[in-house]
Length: 142
Image (cartoon, rainbow, N blue to C red; front, side, top):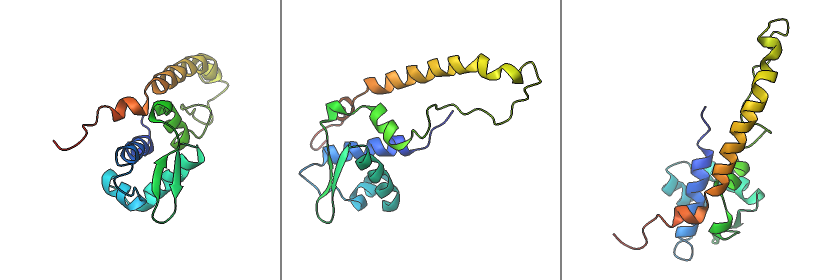
């Protein structure tokens, strides 16, 4: 299983916005330089984060600011903002053969198990706060 890079890029963006708050204008161009990607991609992610209520964006000279304290933002919040499109992270193949002893029961066999795995992942992501990650970034010059 592999997610896109949106979760890690969005987390990077939020950490940079927090770290550089008050020191640098955290524009999409500045954040793109930190993330190492195109500003258009950063702007797309910023839109998702703004829609989720995690950031505010001041057009022009303002830049990006966190809308919540970093201790109130979890990786699950970020995941839900930029990755979650459906109710489940696991996607079933479209047409299992209902006449087959396996195909006819595949949902019955896997649905509860995959839901349990999803809940475990979501709980772990909810336990990791942006502030805990930010605390691991050295402050000042090294």
